[in-house]
Amino acid sequence: MTQTQSQATAAKPARPAPVRPAPARPVASTAPATAPLDARPFVQRLADLPGLTTGATLIGTLLLWEAAVRLLAIPSYLLPAPSAILSSFTAIGFERWMTHIWSTLRVAILGFALAIVVSVPLAMVMMRSALLSKTLYPLLVIVQSTPVVAIAPIIIVALGAGDLPRVVITTLITFFPLVVSTATGLAATPPELIELSRSLRAPAWREMTQIRLPYAVPYIFSALKISITLAVIGAVVAEFVAAEAGVGFFIQFSTSMFKLPQAWAGLIVLAAMSLTLFQLVVQVQKRVFPWSLPKSEH
Amino acid sequence: MMIQQPPAIRFDRLGQVFRTRSGQTEALRDVSFEVAHHEFLAVLGPSGCGKSTLLRMIAGLLKPTSGQVEVFGMPVTGPRDDIGIVFQKPTLLPWATVEDNVIFPVRHKTGRVSPRERERAQELLAMVGLEGFGTRLPDELSGGMQQRVGIARALHMDPDILLMDEPFSALDALTREVMGFDLLRIFAERPKTVVFITHSVSEAALLADRVLVMSGRPGSVASEHLVPVARPRGPDSMKDPALLDLTADLRDRLMTRAAA
Image 1 (cartoon, rainbow over the protein chains, first blue to last red):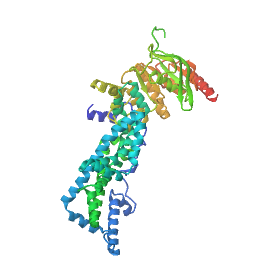
Image 2 (cartoon, chains in turn yellow, cyan):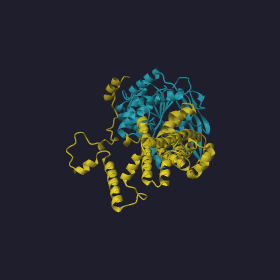
Image 3 (cartoon, one colour):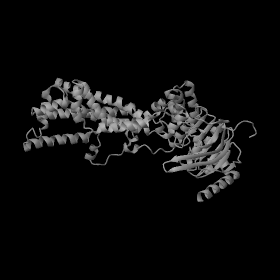
Image 4 (cartoon, chains in turn purple, yellow):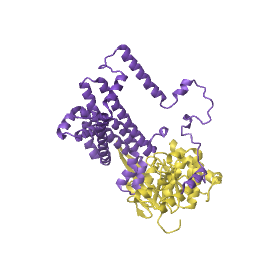
């Protein structure tokens, strides 16, 4: 069916019998195009602009911070002024920053990817077999409840220098929410669809790929959002233990040299990195799996 | 039915006992009945009388504890290709378009979809009154329209037998009535053997050739009623005195059982 055809028929369905006046969509929240003059105070209308309140809060906080540090003469090792942080940020230079950022980003993303590659099949296996689920689950809980910071040195000794031990540490810290959420999602499929699948005598793997796995997508994405920020934490923890580059290493190095404004600059870079990665996951879900979002977020 | 051929469906002294954590529950006891080829049978009864269990056993999804179920003269040993199911909830795939939902059974069973099958999906969508909605997502449709997609999905592999498990119970009263009349039209166009589970007395009487009243716990057949109203039926059939008499009778029977 061509596009124009489908639009023409969609506009005037042959039998428009049971179309209820759909009240489901919260259309009301977006102001109507022919809105009368807004009678509310200017400040309130200003607050509606996207991002403006966030921006204002941020700028206000920074100004307050700067003023407090200057007026109260707070020493920079306690709390450096935003201006001091900014000047040490620019002093580092683009190339040095890129080296550190790339080092941390590489480990975080590789560890995150490895966690996905391990967790999703693991969740599928646990879903299919009650026995495996019973055996593996306690093991996973044990791994999860052991503080990764404590195992990190052991892993570094075992796996040597290079990215590998750091990637493994990152994976260890990220994979648990993924396994649990994916397994929950795979089991949350409507029983009717599983009966439909069984009544069609479809192969079990197709029940997994065509029904269960897509149904788990919203669950997987909730976990991915948690895991991606955990991945940055994992990479930093690994750098604290052993590294010669990376934003975490940079922060530790700066603190040991008592260059606190510089450490704060690293901290802000790290936060920005986390936020960007998180937004990346949010955008992937929005673009690739829009149906998996709650209706209000379309 | 004078023709010498096995009935489409035959229940022979069937019993079903479920083992639960708190012991055993007898869901069905000594259920025997037949459904003729292209007959529309409505099964009426209180909730929890094992109506849905009957459907599962015809579909081969559940093995009876005693007795047996035959479909076209052969004992049911597992799921068969010539049976379609419409569930209480539409349970469409939220990520797939309406058309992809209709062809889902073929794609799920064989892994392939031919252009001919897409054409068939379009025809079926037109038949259930959803022409032009093929590219929409289920989310964009009302509950009644979603259930129409569910019916088109069940008809797509052209089954001989259609099992419908309270398909309209989640819809509002008006939509439900419209859907009933549409179902009459659909089955006039493409006769099928239908087993239709419902707890609406008027729905059962309007749609069915025969109504089976079940009693609850353990479920068994309490009475059987031919619907003495000629086809084609339509909104006027609702005023037919014979149909009104039958609905009153059915309602009385259900009431006394519910009160007992």
